[in-house]
Image (cartoon, rainbow, N blue to C red; front, side, top):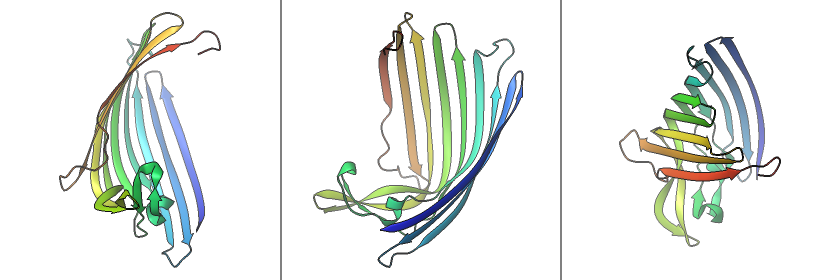
Length: 213
């Protein structure tokens, strides 16, 4: 059992002009964990902030938007990352927490191109996150209760990738959609991160008539 106290405060602002919008915000997070059983208590005070710019070319009016964002993000460990010990059937693993984990701190950059017409909407995004102390589940090679043992560890890492999505309206009721996403995760030592998913291509159709979908 773990007692937890948490508090957060944030602000977000926008400054608009006809062809550009400046967006900026910040967040403070506090958390205190008090576990039973003699485990280490933890206190976290973390700060995050972001600065973004939306550019709307005059000739395209609002049909084309370029979005650029720079963010400094911080995340303190979750309860299970610190203290969980035992089989976790939902994750197909025997998980080992680490009460000595520190918060993740990342510097992230992303740029997006968004466009829309009378029958389509599309978006393409590239992102890169340089993360100090990235927390991940590292397989140990051992087996416990028929599950592979994974330990929560932290290492400096880089995550980068591409996300793309498009909707095309075929008729007034029928819309086709396609999504592509790909992410590459690496430790700064050069080794690949475990449990990074492969790229995905998803396709779908949506039918909507009044309130029925």
